[in-house]
Length: 196
Length: 277
Image 1 (cartoon, rainbow over the protein chains, first blue to last red):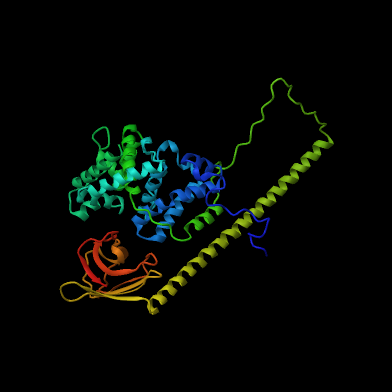
Image 2: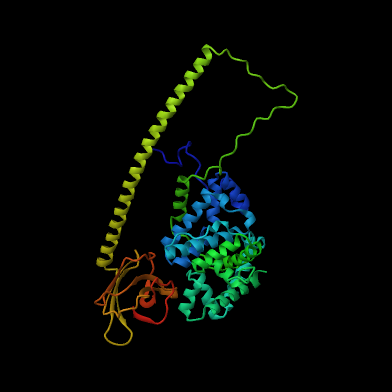
């Protein structure tokens, strides 16, 4: 049996660069193509965001296999129902990482997904479609996180990457509940300062 | 929680990270349904939260991840209405009279049409029943496949266990308490290639109900400790952790044990009560 390379009737091998020209599409055009059933567009979408989603899930779960499961579930969900994300809701990258974090926390805690996270909205000022703009902003955010007082950083990391509730954080750190809440709010304000 | 009209910003910040207790979360959700101001504030909080997530250093995907996704995508149908296009409606062309179909004689031809329709209905009923039977058979096969998958997974675990216990490349590490007597002692057998780990301990001190021991794999290269299982001692002070979910290919510099809350933690809480390398 001749192999695919020698058989003139064999189908074209699927290009990882998108035979439908999807590689250079912006996010909205990509989602439209996915809505039309474009598997190449979905592959491009996966290539564009899978590392980011996987990395967030891995940071929470510390388990490659579980992080992969979370990542696959999210992208298959986008494939099944691309309408679940609406560009009017803001940054697609921002939406994806929050979904990834929430699903990973759910997995960590072995509980059923809580809120319908697909329905949340990010402000339109958060559209980070341009890679350079995103890189610069993320560098500023990393510096802001590194510059946080230790107790604020601990509170944010316990809440965000371990999924602890405010009372669990208070118990773990031995701090009053009100103090924990204030520290988290102050940490988020420091981050907000860098993006506005 | 609310200052009369709106939710406190601190609670919205916690809500954005799902860090409120369930009852508090439900109260915030109910308020958000009716308050555009708080929804806007929450959107800003979520933007901040998303940036925290995006600062996580990006890791390479494991080998084969893209191919697995492509294979799953090829087998997954999109929801109805996603890829289908609506059939265009027929629009009469202006200026032309509508086409009228000739009135058919109701006798012989009408009877024939009814016969065809009845036959089509009978075929549809048969196909529907046949489809129902096929679906039942498919469901039964799915169950068998699921059972076989569970058995295959168990066989794989047993093989990993045997490899870890017998392989000359498996690392043997003994852990002892760093201070005090009597001496709790632990022994870890770890095979980095497969991530297989067996840990047994004895003379462990008892813990209160709300606490647990947690085992940690400390990788070489200064990377963050990896949770390697929770365990509580039995009445004799013994415990074991067998094949916890660990990533493959991680070289271990050391192992450690800490005391954590009952549900465990993803970062160790000092002090380390047992360690070994």
